[in-house]
Length: 269
Image 1 (cartoon, helix red, strand yellow):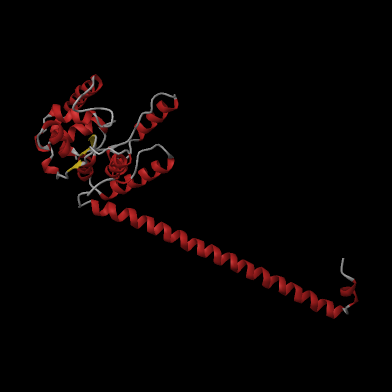
Image 2 (tube, rainbow, N blue to C red):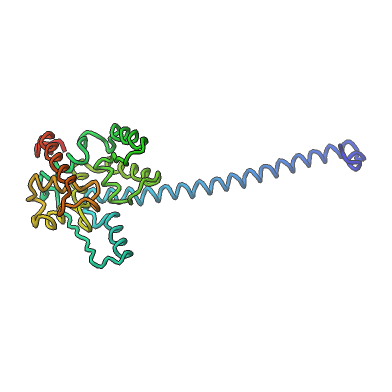
């Protein structure tokens, strides 16, 4: 109901007052909308800058590592930090980059036979293996992995162990980048250089010297298969003191290597 004061005003005056009130409301609404728009624009700019920064900080290293040997990896740094925190004064990191031509062909085929037999055919993800692992894990049995060599490179090089969704999402992102920017041969070369084979032992060069007193180029099929046998859990499985499980897995890997065609398989990579 209109107040007595407004009622007392002449009709023309009330009309002008109403027009002024409507104009004031429109101006207030426009100013409020403008403030909200500015806040949204500022938030959008911040988000764009964050996304561009994230892309730059991830794409550039992946692009550089297409050509340059990694000086270290996330898993190597983690091992060093854990040794420091736990006071493990006897820990020694062993890692020596070697190029593709200095790695035994048996080592290359062995890790493919053990970890990713569709390596030359997928684009970073083995969807069938992922589906089977998901069904298996839903049944409450021991957790089964389904990571390809590309995924393992992404995880070992840039990330950390774990099963949370954030880590998995980052792993998928880095895997896609690696598959997009690196040829398969480079992916396998990096994997063989950064994979862990024992406490503080990373890469086939360090593993060959530590366990067999020979260079990675001279590894024979049995030695290569033994190294590949411990890849699922190098902290528990031992090359120097192989369990019955490791020896059984070594024999299985040797059979798979033959079925893949041995060193001739590498023509596909």
